[in-house]
Each structure stands twice: as structure tokens, then as C-alpha cells.
Length: 138
Image 1: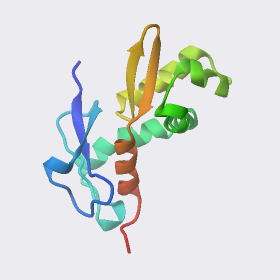
Image 2 (image 1 turned 120 degrees about the vertical axis):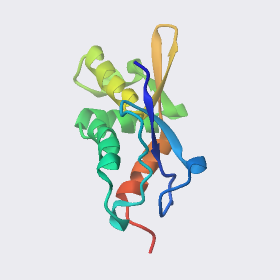
Image 3 (image 1 turned 45 degrees about the horizontal axis):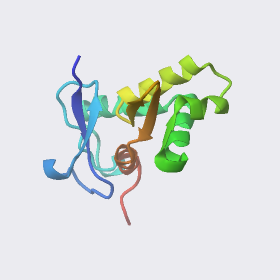
Image 4 (image 1 turned 135 degrees about the vertical axis):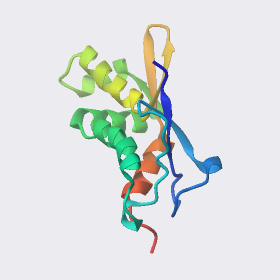
């Protein structure tokens, strides 16, 4: 099933951005745009909330949040399951599942190299979520 796209404002955007400056994220959400100013500047529309919620839901699990942090801070900015498995008291298939959830939500990119899959954080997605959750500049 092809994925649609989710759009988030770039960091520092005070209002909904124009389509040329949006960040494109893969998403399971159908045909929508979530180009949002910080939450403190105005309420999200129902459509925007429905599009952003899967990203936040993916990060709401402690294992996935920690995986996101480990991948983003890993030397070279990428990691494979073999690099991450020792950090958890979980099986490799369980870690792979959590990484798949993060990838499917658009928070991680992945690249298969031989038998290994390497993951890289989509820093623009994290920055856009930070902008959405953060407060506007004073």
C-alpha cells in the first residue's frame, strides 16, 4: 500500500508555512497536510491533530523513544539493530519491530545493506515536532 505524505512546518515557522518550505514525511495518513504553528499560537484543526498524533504515538513508547535517541546520537548518525540490541533486554525481532514503527511513522529512514538494515533519524521531522510542541519565540 503506497504511503501518503504528511507536511510539517520547518523549525522556527510561526504560522503555517507555504508548500515550498514544508518538510515531506512519509505517513500512513491519507491525503492531508499538517502544517502547524506551535500549539501555543492556536488550536490544531481536527485534521492536523489526526495527522500529527501517529508521530507522537510512535514516540510515546519508552523503548521507541530511547531507540530514537540512540539512533539520532549514534556516531555517523545511523545505526543497525546489531548496534542497538545490547542496549535493551529485548530480542532482536522486538527491537526491529519498534524500529519499523518509527520508520512507518516517518521518524526514521532506513537503508538495507546486505543482511543489515541501517536506520537514520529524520532530524527535520524531529525539529518540526519540536516546533509544534514548543512555545513561540518571545
